[in-house]
Each structure stands twice: as structure tokens, then as C-alpha cells.
Length: 389
Image 1: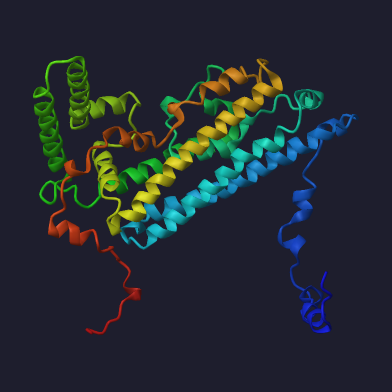
Image 2 (image 1 turned 90 degrees about the vertical axis):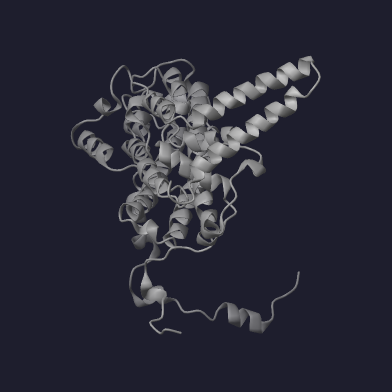
């Protein structure tokens, strides 16, 4: 091992201890006295301290702190949409960065179950009696998070045959009611997608052109298959083509879309779906690259929330089997029912892959829209010179 020279040692000690000069220090800034003294073990209060209760409390407190950060980021993104600041497309980078931060936090939360699972079912059983009637369902922040992202109230699974809000009292119940009236991220993204450039019927008319191209492409495929000699393969191909035709006919049927919307099988408006598909098809165009990344990140959030729910289900099943939850729910069975598309907010974005078509079926951009998609819209003149040159 090399010995450090005198000069290296001097350089390493060349700093100044500013803490000795007064001002706020690390522990005070983070209010660690409050944070680190908030792990109160009920088993210890009852006279029989259980070691793993400390892990249980710390892990759940960490979850709640991260939920708080997610809500902080989510509120800032929603505010940008609400104020109409996304019309200045430079703000989309800020939106994307914060949404991706939420994605990274959710990845961490999914992995965090591994720490909790170092505790065995018997270890948990030792202190479980001290938790009742507390329950993870009572996490106000997680319920607020669901509302702000856009989980549909009508699609929620009842909790002990009661509306989810009935399990909260007083100010918490009022807060949830208030949050339900605020525009969710889903609704704000929907409004943004409806303004996608190129959807205008009197402009590029992406939707009208796409319908014409797809119908033409399907007819060309039909003609190719009809020229084939009679065989089982031919019949199979004709059957698949008929299914494709039905699929795309439904895509361009606004009444059918509205029917699926009323059933909760779709979430976005008809025009917003058009905008999402246009961004999907032309994602390589400069103006659509950041929006496409945003749509991808929104799917990541849905995926990770589903993984979080699934990991939670698996952990609960491992810890308590089929017993009722400490809050009185059916436990594992209730949680398992929430791992479904009912709780996916951006399910329509996942389903866009259903409508993929060969690239030559996608409408070619005319010079006007092609130029437009190369230029970002900026409403803030603070970066612009007043000089004519």
C-alpha cells in the first residue's frame, strides 16, 4: 500500500470547519431528533419488546416519506398543466424530469419489500396483535396519490362493502373528498393530448388519413390472400384478417369508444386517444420525442404501482396467510382483487400497441406539418433578443 506524502495529507486537511462558526447544522436541518425518535414500539410499551417491530415501523415510515415526495413532485407537474405552462414546450422537460423521478422512487418502493421480507411470518406474529385496528389501507397519502394520478372512483374495489372514503373520519375524509374534485394527472394529460398538433380536421387530419390508409391496406392484404390457392393456411389468414378489420373498425367508431369509456374499459377521450396514437407513430419527430418519453413514463408509473400492489399481496400472504387484516378486511383476498386493470390509470397507453400497423400504412407527413414538428412552441420571450437581427 502506497504511503501518502506530506503534501497529500496537508491537502486533505485544508478545509474549514464552518459548523464551529454557528448556523444550522445537519441534524437540525433534517430535524433528526423528531424523525429518529418517532419509532415507538407498541410491544415495548406493553412490556414485551419485539425486535422486528422496529424494522416494521421504520420500513412503513420510509414508505410514507417517499409517498410525500411523490405527491410533492406530482403536485408540481399538475400545477404546470393546470397553469397551461405546457403550451411552452420547454416546460415539458421539467414535467418529464419530475415524472421520471416518481418512476425511480416507485422502483425503490417495489424493491423495499425485500427488506421487510427478511422478517419471518412468526416474527411478525409476535407483535401483530399490537397493530390492530391499524391497517395499511388507512394510509391517507397513498389514497390521495391514487386520486391525484387518476384512479377511477367507480372502478375501486369496495373495502368491507364500504366506499373507501368511509374508512376515514373527520378532516381526512374531507381531504379525500376535496382531492376527488381536483383535476387528476389523467384528466390533465387527456386535455394536453387533445391539443396534439396534426389532429385538426381542416389541417393535417391525421385520424382521417390513418383510417383511409388502414382500410386500403386491409383491402390490399385481402386481395393478396384471395390469390392464394385454397388451403387451411388461406382460411386461417382470412380469419385473422377479419379480426383485424373488426379491430380497426372499432378504433374509428366514436360511439363504440364512448361505450367502452362508460364501462371503464377505456380512460381517455376519443380525441386524446387519437393524439396519443399520433405521438406513438411519429415519436421520432423532434417535437414528439419528449411527449413520447412522457407517455412511456406514465406507463412505467402504472406498471410499478401494479408491481407494488402485487409485492404487497405476496408479502401479506406470506405473513398472515388467509387471515383477516388487522383493519378488519379479508386481508390477502381483498389485496389480490386490487391487482388488476381496474387500478391502472393509463391503460389506454398500454393498449396502443394493439393498433400497430406496418410503417407504410402510417400517413406521410406533408411539408407543412413536417416543418411544424421540427419546431418547438415557446411562449416565453425572455430568451429572445429584441434586435431584428
